[in-house]
Length: 252
Image (cartoon, rainbow, N blue to C red; front, side):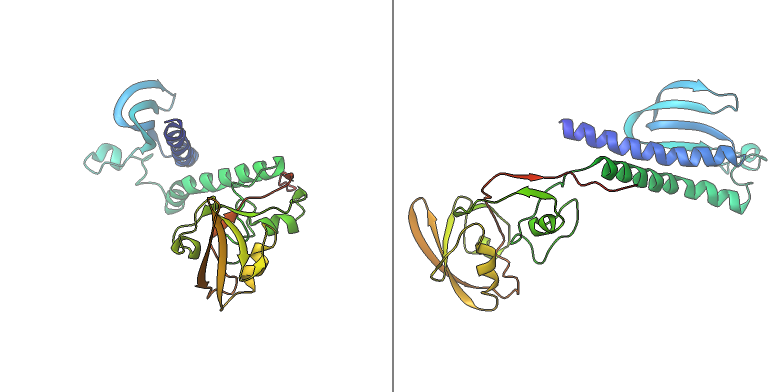
């Protein structure tokens, strides 16, 4: 429930600052703003009217906002062709008003992300090295090896059994019916752990190989072929040991 409320609030905020861009640009270029509304009509109530005649209103539907400029209604020739209407503004002023909204959104996004990275952020999620094809070098959704390469992980992993934590849909592991809680013990006849599993899988690229695993104490062996050069199995493995992800920070 709270996630829905937060989503609506974020959407409202982005729309309102977008409309503020149109609002400020119209005011600066001499086009009259007849109404600045938060929310979508019907109107709930009017907050105030400023000296230029702009009404500030709150509306019932919380899904956006709007700016109503003078001269938007061709059926009203008195306002449509007035000196301070949008239609009578120069082409340059019209373009400034039209592009002001996205410009404000772009500036806000740049400031927000800059402030976050200067303060320090944590990744949204860390992708296991064998969880995707290739490597993700994104600071928001990085692979484990990328964080290690950047010096953003302190502490050491403990070598433990390769216990499956998650299986990705439509992956090789999913098609082989591997499940969370299964423990991969051997690739072919070689014993593997949480630290060595990815390395041994990559060595099987283009080959047929056997996976031996434990499920509820019972040992099972399945055979498959990995066509991908990284041998993408599609599982995340339980990590062992104490590790800490350092905050990701950048200079201004």
